[in-house]
Length: 192
Image: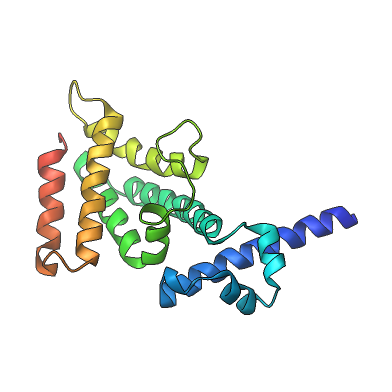
């Protein structure tokens, strides 16, 4: 292995460590606790080393969001592919989305609540974000209904899921109604 290859591998390893440490710290203490100083201390590198990978917290949030988008896409596809029938696929997809948001609140925030400097619904949207939307579209596009643009329907359904995830987490919805809300969303919004 050449010196250049070793340096590139070490750089990639440091970058993964920074992102993993930011995720861990955000999960434990919230994103306000994630500072470049704290990250540098935790990973035992100087702040200049950290800045050689990311210009600041915003880029770190963006890196966490991209990683999270790939994880979400995989979870959505796995859930949908394990279900039989259109209704079951849509319900499995919706459950997987809400479970991902509940199990990964810091990552979910990086994806949808915080400024990670990432473009959504643009030409320059990063591939992991496009792929997460595609994972929704693959299942929801087949239940959009006649004359309804599949991507538009997917955006609407996604918005409803995001609202449920956000309002539930904030304690704005009664926990005992979670299943009924999700059933209602699947039954009334999707053409099954």
